[in-house]
Length: 405
Length: 221
Image (cartoon, rainbow over all chains, first blue to last red; front, top):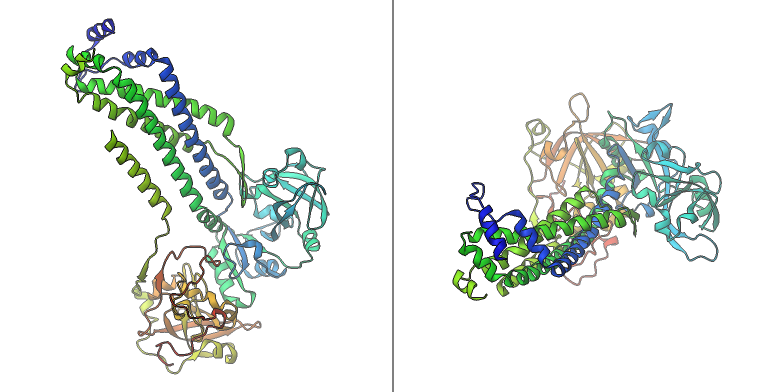
């Protein structure tokens, strides 16, 4: 140690950046490597903490993204009055789609086809075969006009469903507790007393639609012995405005309709998940708090064992601030290394892992936001975990520190 | 060290407590705005003659008939139309949640206790200019109105074959005795029966049967 100190003293130069002479960068690095077991265990603990934080953040970000990308600002959902956001319970007459298309100006149109999609939407029990257990699935009966309104939808395998066929979202397997093989084209699903053949699979840019099962509207109406719709989704042209759809619904009281922007609908759902989000953030705070205590504990141990060394540094001319900075450097390097390891593990193993929830399923998102927050928390752990023990040790006088040799 | 641990623990606990209490209850009177210069032209300084309530008006009125109708602003979670001077008007005989003693509904203007009666007791009011065009400013901003205010509308009725009546308003008188709604709780919350209408007292008011039997302090038409 003495050799180290003398060498460092020779190397140390006045540094105008810090207004004091800092210890060389290599000094902190070498100190970490002098106690490989303690450093390794601390690294492991901090990596676990940062990984947990990233997993929870990935959950929140995945949930947010799933609901955020589901809405189109120009698309309006028209459904029964007084249903809140519970589209499953909504019931509007079959003629509503034609009525809206003919009554509201500004609905987008292509080759004479209005962007108005009549839909029957419900949650029902679905199973892969007669002996399999049932799971709650989300089924949507549609016409081909749905492809106009849900513009982010793309068929990834197979074809649009024909009679008694269904198109399955790529996250439906997670929602239904099935394997990927069980939702491949040609496989069968049972719901509403019928056996449906899977005609293909679809993706919808990560939206909640991806956990749904889509089939022909008339097929679903026949299976359920219903003649009504749950909703009509319409896409407005660039010059049209939601307010005229709203005005139409409020004027035609006999239809008992209400309109909501698709983005507002998903924002409402997102608001419903606020308690989950708050709970997740609380977990982040608690886990990060635990991480701070891990850092504190380790750094206390590391610093207390080096009291004579740190006192010697002061004796040969380094200021207390220089030594504190060096201790903080050690803690920060450890924490950021742990963040790097945690992000590699999180991105490699957890990113895009499917999670089932009430509205369907979504993928955990270890994205730039998650990584940024994770690294920020790691930096916080490194600084806050090492600062208090360093400050405490330097409250001792140099003489008392040297006596501890 | 001990002080530090206590301090950090406190921070975590406080953060947790604040995190869990996102729905803070409020009980404040809504601020009624002032009408704009353009909107002031539509406001009447005195009640325009004898007014009909919404239900009898809907039954009796003919298409293109001049009418004077009285009612309260409401009928849905959002009785306004954004960016347009239009709003829903409800018959005064229907009870808003504020008329039910002890009801804690945060959006009492949606008449959620009598939704089945609303279609026959509601009319849409459109404020139109001299050319008969709907004014393209929200009614709240234009006229300084708020939910559950009692207003008297003077205008022309439009009635379609399905019995829907829309009033093309030329003049609006705001009843000064009814200040309108009182904001309670989180008005943005899910209103699909997200609250249980807990009453302060133990009265057994049946919401579905709830109707105002008196004029509730509102001026006679």
